[in-house]
Image (tube, rainbow over all chains, first blue to last red):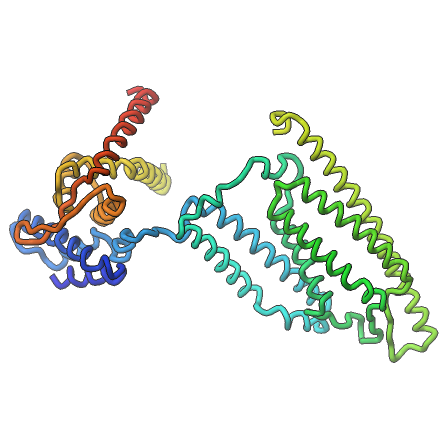
Length: 324
Length: 116
């Protein structure tokens, strides 16, 4: 009978103190009754092997004790789809941020190692941390029975049936670019000189210092708009409006920055002054072309967003059954 | 038919059978506890009527139903051992009556669908 004692002890160790004695006493009676029945049927004392088989049939101590717990699972079937969708989205954002940083490190080679130094924790640790954090949030929702908050939704919040949905990975990359840019802009990460052999040094011209706060506020706004697009795909009109404003503001800011006429400061210790002047002019010309190109792109994007906004408004105005 | 395909079909059937039985087991336990029983005898009584239930699942279920106020229990000595006797509480009796109505309505609907 020492096997029954060990078995009950193993179960009791997994139970809350208040339940231990009561559950053990009941299970002891059940097991002894079963043994007595078996012995009466066999007409002899049960062997140790037969008793072991009976206990195995009864169930693993962890399984039996687990059935007495209020919580039977970490993430149940009701919460699982929400946990899974949130996990995919969160991991995509983390991968997006790290991918952008990795590309910068690859492009910059050793010179961009400064980026790598600042990106602790590693990607693996960040992914595990994200997995843990998302799981913890949903396990708490499951544990405290707050699943109703997950089911508060309206069909009108769903993304439009037509049109291509932005994948979490694409959104993750966009958000990653935004995060890396902001971190660089506020000086949290630095990219060292990427030009070969350090023949030239490039620094930002004073115009960028003048535009520091507008650009920072604009970048945070853009990040928020991208997050909104990812988290609230059903708010198509709001997202398009945010993107239209983003594109128009970007075009206006770039037009202002363009007025400066001088955007990078080229420094060198090896080139003679006349060559440096030509190099400086060429760099500024390149940046000027880039700024004009970016203004054009932003104007086109603003037009596309405004057109989509108009289409969405027309769809909203149509009868519900026709827009379904 | 390959062995693995047969195994899969058996597993599917077994899964569906378990799902089908899960809800009705509570009904069977509540129904059986209109008369007082202790766990071991309750399980035997259910088995005698063709309702098999795992021991590892029955006792936690009895505790849960008691926590929900559907059963009452008391420890009493019988056959020289302390045993925990369960029976329906007034709330359990009322709930069982409502569940029986549900069960009969569902059964009738299913009979109509299945043509039995």
